Image (cartoon, rainbow, N blue to C red; front, side):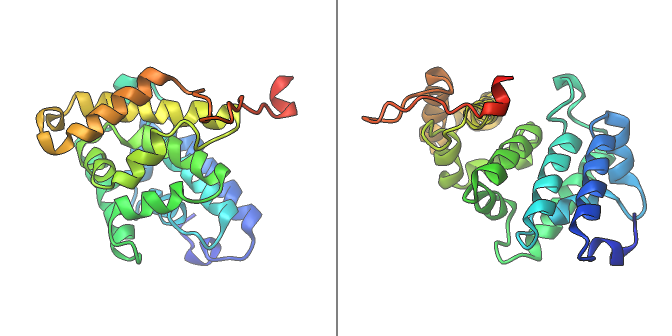
Length: 221
């Protein structure tokens, strides 16, 4: 999977399948560590594709794979990897950000949350997995627009979208309240917004419209 020609190929279906396979491997702590510490790190393909808007299908698969590698599907006590793997994860994310027009991870994250609902949902999962890391939490809190989106119960209209956004919001709030930022007056407004959003739950009705969660037919069976 290190063939650069393969990853740049126009066969989107093959690339998506490969990214999904890497995500499956990365869902375990051993697999995630392997992907981050291989030479060169296989996780680079996932991270590069996760922040590349050129191929939506590949970006979706990569965002979900990155969420798995970051520990979104693992028990909380196994989300964080060993220090060398964690350094690799951080370095790879900052490297792709530095090569982008956004320059910072926070800029890339915001651009993902401003895309269509299915990309945003994958972005929520990625944030949920990564936010236990202090450096990533700082990136999230450095952009008020990110906090505004994840705390807004009217952002998503499908049941899965609302619930995934809420899980993301809870993960950010938990990481925030466990960090040194909690006592910093500069972040007082963010602390209040997160607390209110968690208290309100995932299904807060739209003002005046009183929308109810949309449940796709397939989700009812």
